[in-house]
Amino acid sequence: MSFRILGVDPGLTRCGLGVVDSGRGRGLRLVDVGVACTSPEEPASERLRRIADEIEAWIARLEPDAVAVEQVFAQHNVRTVTGTAQVAGLAMVAASRAQVPVALHTPSEVKAAVTGNGRAEKAQVQQMVRRLLALPEVPRPADAADALALAITHAWRAHAVGAVHESSSRQTAAQQAWAAAEARARTAGRGRGRAVGR
Image 1 (cartoon, rainbow, N blue to C red):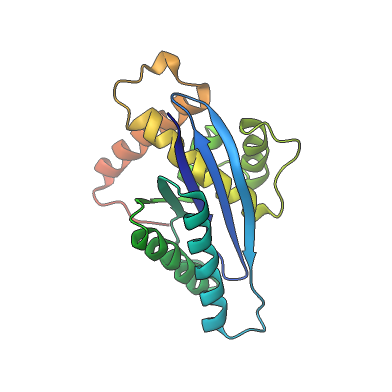
Image 2 (tube, one colour):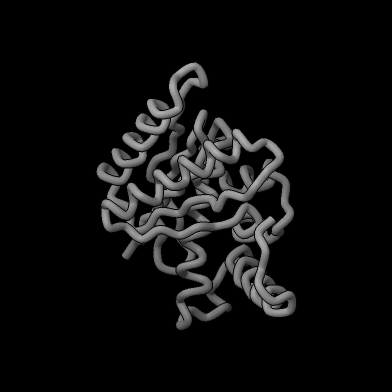
């Protein structure tokens, strides 16, 4: 039985969308990938409506079992982070309306899940996405690959962390690294008290 995840890499100019099927244990299969684009010349309300329509269309067409969205953190560019947060909210609302569970994953969680290194460079993540999905080349633009990385992260969280009956000996090295990174994050969080997003 497969588990289908829609990954959403939120952005107002380019919103990455990627869907993977995750089989029992460690199987991954690309279903679809793309980018919803809008122009900075358009009114913000129109851009948000168009992206919302696109996300809703992907959910309706591909019927994911879960939607994984990148958790937005404050950056120096306030305009960029505002648009990104707005689009992340659209994805969460679209999933909620379709009664599909939503999960948020931080960039470091995604890096740890896909490469085993929470500080990996974007290029490393993209190359691992290509390898894990047996693709001839890295999906372009980068937002598309990032969306697939989010979907993979959630698939492996469900199987490697949430599935308590899954023996670690049956997990791939990347899945084991993801579970270890999760355990380290929980331990560090307890040591500092309440975790603070970066």
